[in-house]
Image: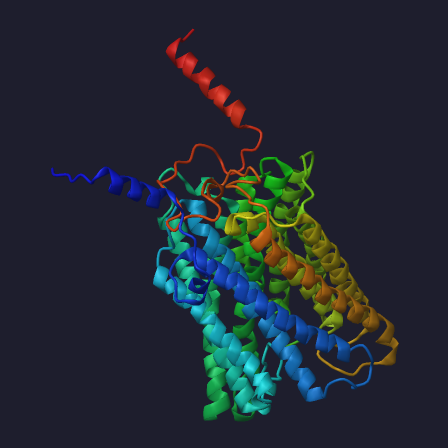
Length: 559
């Protein structure tokens, strides 16, 4: 064995380099960087920009719907706006935002230095901006897709070929990004945990991402296959789905929804995980039913694959198939209800801190329950047939995805902002953001339930004048939602630059990411962490230590 010694001056210099945390330069966030933390921030910032763009499209749609006449944009532009709004919000905001949180947090939570495949991780992100720019550019150049985000044939084969082709390419690129990310998350969680962390010692966010990634890998290739075949029909003149050539458009619906209903869980499961992290920390209580929440994520991932045809109750599928999908759709409410019950039980009797993160988490629980209840209603075949393609479905969708996923995103932003930036967020502006968001959300989407029950169809710019008053309320609510974004943007920028220093663990949380510096060093941990307690052992650490001492004394001095 040989060793080398360094002069004391060089030894002290090396020590300073190991204890001083390198701060990233601003331009590094615009490069092909393989650091999972940089990639996580790239995802979160980029997706928020697309959220703002999609929100502008939504407000343009709502402005047209403020009156029953077509008097703001042309019907063609209206069709393109709602097609792009849905596509942007799903594929460029909610899905990649979940990947952003997973990128930043998973290695920290499992005690790893980085993701399993760092270059693949960077590639997964850098597929997203070109896909998004391509999609938005189609609107600017005047040939945007206008067949809806479902792109059903034969309608999608009858509209502008260039716009539809752009939509297909963009969604294929974004699906590729999701698949690459899922491979990375699964490998990192299953193979790169510190030796002292068993599966049942992982934070629940890890369980949520594990379930989401499995769902992505199974369902996304089916959507890719459907879109590739659709592109052949569109460009090469084949007849996979074109009924005039003997194709079957219902097969496209099966392939599309085999991905696109699991996509609802791909969008919501990561933020189930976020809420499971936020609530126990800010309630100062152990999570209620850890294993039930963990296994319910796996149950949702499995059941999510066998419910797709409830979107097709009016498409002529056989009655026995309707009954099967009605039953499975109702059953999937059970594991979701387990999570809701566990979160409420965790908050019950806790020392709740009503900060911004907790307010958004509580808002998530309340509004998601509304979306869940209307989802069980839509699972019933007779009711679904009655309200199919009406604004009741729009209301349900937005209570799940805005009231659920988007509020979950903001809860995550506020909860981990001190860890990511090293600065505390301003609570006044955070609470103002919550109030405006919560009021705007319910004002926009709650009246849509009644609009749907009264028979107002979705996806159309012109409607019966009897629906005008409710549409005016919805439009005003959408403007409040737009305004709610400004205090958030101001708060993030101001707090990041001028905010109070947060310290390593301002929330006194117990998961591993809070044991690192804020922001974390390049390799996350100075030494491999060792698990000494559960991720949610709030208020029971002292009791556990005392029990261990008693057990040790019994072993040494048996009676």
